[in-house]
Amino acid sequence: MAPTSRRNNKSTSSSGGGLKGFFTRAGKSFYTGGVFASDKCYKVAEKLCKLGFIFATVCMVAYAPLVFEIAREGQMIESEKLQVGELRNQGYSDMQLRELGYSGPSIARAPSVLLKK
Image 1 (spheres, one colour):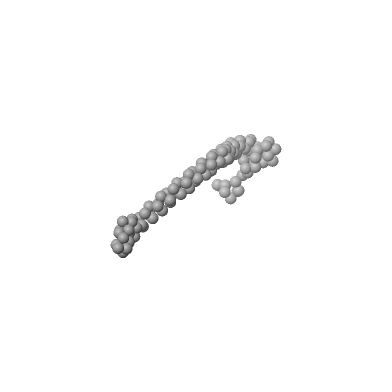
Image 2 (cartoon, helix red, strand yellow):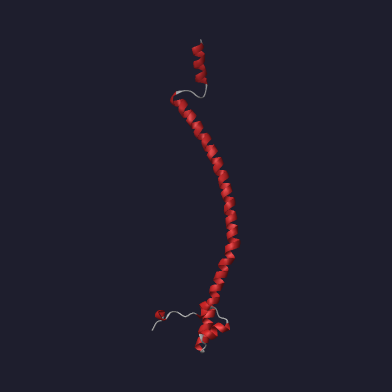
């Protein structure tokens, strides 16, 4: 009577033997692993979103004014170059232009090899 009761216990339990039991246990294991992985991935994604928001905010606050200032400086140099060109046509020398307060990049001339003849 003991062997039949043991056999009945195995057949009624969900962890039966053979391929059916293996696939049942493997399916449960994969499902549990998937739930665990999706939970951890969700938490990691939340942290990465927070870090991304902080990084984007810092970039806007710190680097945007720098980019605008660099663009404005380029415009100022271009306008000074136009003024320097007009003053050179009037006969001012480089030394006189420096004394007037114009910056070096706006006074600098192209090398003679680059000038078209």
